[in-house]
Length: 345
Image (cartoon, rainbow, N blue to C red):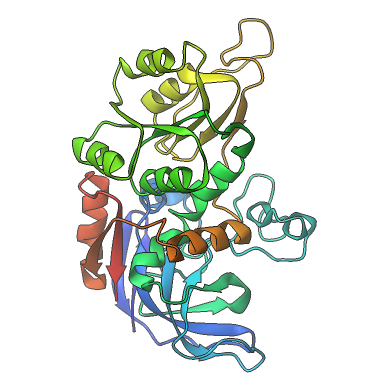
């Protein structure tokens, strides 16, 4: 089979390798599609600092069951499945309490939990071996369309679920960046809350996508955006701000418009920062709640699948053959993709 391997700092290759064997508790998945994420670009840019070379890339994957381990029941050849982005242990206190994206066994205080394509072999291949507990059936959903839901759907769902106490009817939610994650976050907010949604981006095509997806107000993310949001909220600020970019200008915007007690969720990993100190005149309003979460939980994934099955959540995708992986990565880095790029073996 063919697989995209990260062979050295900043370099990937399409290699011919054997189809992997499965253990008794594992499933061989015939990959239908593998999504590209800006996290993959971060790995490429880390150079020698990245600790895992030689593995198959790709943490967003979906496909069909090809072969079922001898100890398993409940799966049949041909079942369409979505592969979880977090491979938690399932039995530590965090996992038992439903915080599997904070797994104490397959992660640590400063290390993200085990993730396919970021250590174990990922989805940019013709076949992939997965423990049964890291798969969810998706029914009649097209696994090519569904592949990005593993991260681009689950990660916004988790961020939104963590902020629901402020996403009440009449609230205002700000979505910064209508890209791969942001356009799904906007749809989740629209489908599951009564919040007024203000969407921002610098790209006109993405702003038009936000309008089509039902944003209540669409704004160019520029120097005037913060004041416009404050004007729209009687100078009080937004109840929740979801920054799906995370670069310095978007972090500055997010911190400038959050309301007292508001939920500030940084989802994009763009490297922006802000100063915070304890005392009068602090950088954020009183009570502001700040979170940078990793991926999401199994429950978040089941919610995402249900919304997609109900027709309330859909991914804008651009398809590339697996052999054209480099073109897809180049297009992603250049900002030429609206939505998500998906490699098809």
